[in-house]
Picture 1 (cartoon, rainbow, N blue to C red):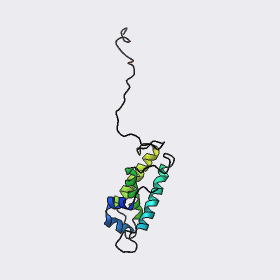
Picture 2: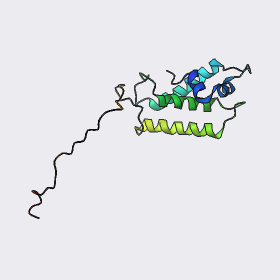
Picture 3: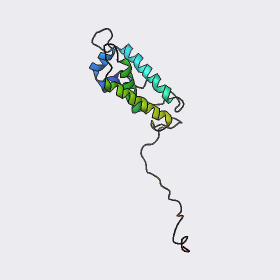
Picture 4: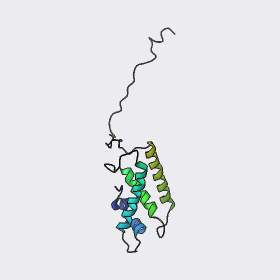
Length: 141
């Protein structure tokens, strides 16, 4: 399952940049095949981090993974005429750090291991328990 689409890439980076990254034939258009292959490879890279923590394929794609997939795809497509830039390299490195945090369990995708969405809204429940020290327990001191 791919975590991002051509429309996601255009939304994040703009059509001009996606054309520059994918147009191997110099037709001035997005090469859908090149982009689809790159998105698929980026999704495979993401799956390598998620496997073992989540059952794959995920039932839905969290927005965080869509952004990470776009950043990885952009980085992987750079080279040749589309020069790798410092911002794209930094976004890639940040994406990998986030995936490592997900793998360790330090960052959540909003899914529990049973693939049910974790509620993000609700009340916090606090249980104070019983007091250890009170006037009665400290009366002799």
